[in-house]
Image (tube, rainbow, N blue to C red; front, side):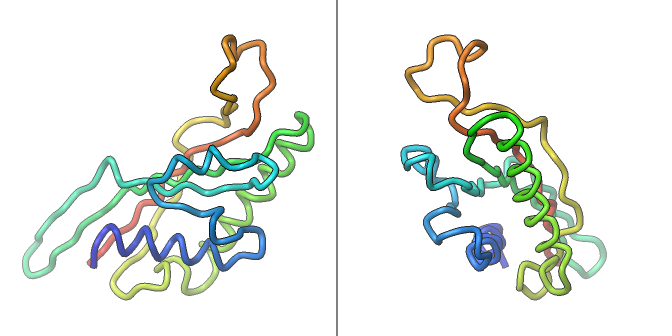
Length: 149
């Protein structure tokens, strides 16, 4: 088992949802932001920045904190945040379904999913003063704590 296998299993899980096309769920590919925002929502899965590997007695155990960012098209405040809530809940409901806490893998569990900050705006590259601009997308980074044993 590897971190890469876990990230790919998460990608497969999210791509199987009706909400997403295969190209909408990527691993380590921020060029997804070059796509039309009309195609959103998107999910971006990153390489874990934090991990812990242990060997207690006879068992190996590695915990990966895998960042997963949900990006949703901004139309107006009400619609964008309502859509965001709906898509985030879909992710959580999917992961809370029997079998998905393993992301379809043996010897893996996704023990915890938590937000890694608030919901932020994502702006076009040309925006000079984002505090006065309307975002193209809104996004939140979540951490999926995956334990492999």
